[in-house]
Image (cartoon, rainbow, N blue to C red):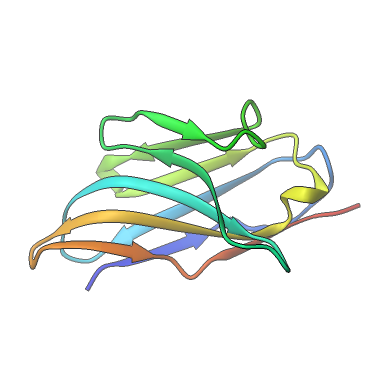
Length: 119
């Protein structure tokens, strides 16, 4: 079984920074794409950032220039560096990935980590 575990959420003031981590564990051969999504109260879950197996990144317009996604293949971990945070960034952040495992290919979701931006 493969698991994704997010960490790094918390309370931060507007203008502050946080770094989220998403660690994959289990019988992993390789991690293909990885996404970060977020879901704010009353809103649908939306895509924030993507990184491919080759390291190509893509971002939602709302976070371009403020957020950065990166991966450490040796640690099977993906990060989301969030700078210049705004109250509207408040949400539960989820990682989602396509993982090649010993039994086969899986799409896996983490449990989410809460980010609250407030003074």
